[in-house]
Image (cartoon, rainbow, N blue to C red; front, top):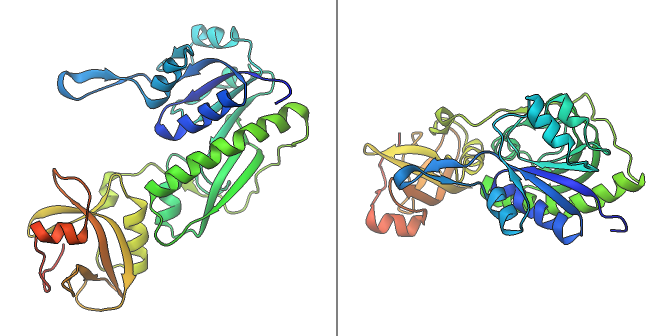
Length: 308
């Protein structure tokens, strides 16, 4: 890029890291990284910094982990960075107006949907669960509304029947990293003009509730495949087999019929409200994901079993 920008990066999970890496490789001056505070987990409840926090520290970038950006002290600290732009990717904190107005070129968000569809917290999960055939990444100028800002650049990606939230997560993270550099270049030199989002087709990707994860076998097979893939790998759609919880992670629509939830083949095909699903990957409690063949070797689920 002809003129490197002075910027702050604001992100937390694995999804954000490829974009930060792309900004560094493009020669931008990342003077600060903001991330959610370290979580406490594992034996001894040790503090575990987020993926962005760890990556930024490895690069020698100062890391800030405020619990809020609403205080005057935090806003003054942010203003003192003297930024051209802030890049935000799955940060997890709301940016108040006083923060949004600080950078010379504004705050830019990498959002994993084709806006205005799937504004909000869980756009990848919701797109798969709804059976969408296309998704993508929008590079958006941020404003006070929830993902309502105008779009600078869009990259599209088809959703295949075998895609899960996990597989799309990785593809979209890479797509966001690919899009951010030309988007910033176009913003800086004026060659890209943000276009307002349309008013039609607005949907909200509400946070995934674990209560949604239980499988209702009376639903059609295609809907259930989307449900299973949308919740894979986390939190995992589940059912019970003789009182034991089993997460189903991958499935394909197949021929067959029977009582909803009934196993109708020796290879774990299950009857649905209409049609059937062949389970391809599953996970028992306390064990890792495994193919159906591996699962059935140690955990037989004979034809005629009813999953609930």
